[in-house]
Image (cartoon, helix red, strand yellow):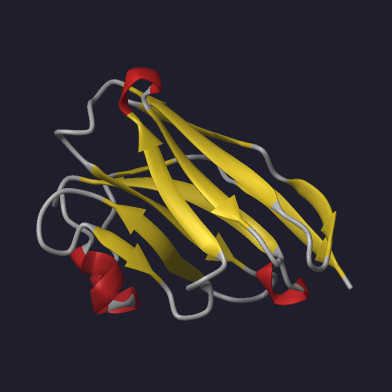
Length: 128
């Protein structure tokens, strides 16, 4: 199993970026795929997820209306479209696969984070 993030970089506040998470070794039927963000000196926080079932889409309050998660099954890729970026969006973004299939752990918060697989992370820097 492998998850590889791409698309990070430096952007000015108000700008946009699209992150990609391309995975191998499993299919969309096996795992919910989501994104975590870790700001410098802070804990890793789940910000978006796409999965299967009643809780199949999740956005953290901090990114609602600005970020959009989507998937391309043919490419085994999950995208995170980020717009109107703010300096507080700066951090390392990690892709994660969770065998629970839905996005329940994201709704539950840090005490429920239990992803099965992680990407290595990619840096996003938003300048003011």
